[in-house]
Image (cartoon, rainbow, N blue to C red):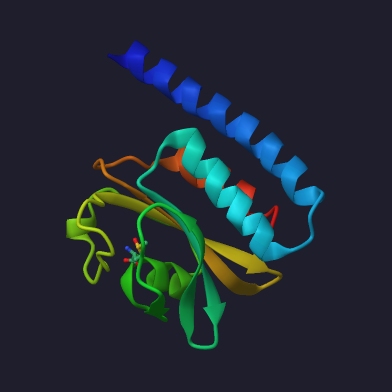
Length: 155
Ligand code: SME
């Protein structure tokens, strides 16, 4: 079991490493943030087969839906609401192993079981969040957190 876990983790690290290098290439040749968000959402989504992968942009006092892959989603989230609004408020990545246990979780899709939300900074200011949903419980861990935080610095 431990061996299986180690191999699975190694697989994830390797996939993130390759993904990061590809993402760097794609984003350095394009300066438009929305275009880069669109490609990053597609690349992350395709690499891991998540249920939903996308961005919400900070616009005034709320988050507004940006480029994404997966089923349609809610378009606006207030500051401090849901996992996305809470990650924005706290200014840090939130990993939710079971969305039913997160008070105030916003269920855009009833099939989503676990989630990670990563804030995106421009200097000291949060300008967007990356939100990823999985159909499985406890999909995200410190490895996802580490690499996704690195990937969003490319924007
Ligand atoms: N679950 C999120 C809402 C966005 S969807 O998952 C795409 C939240 O609680 O903020």
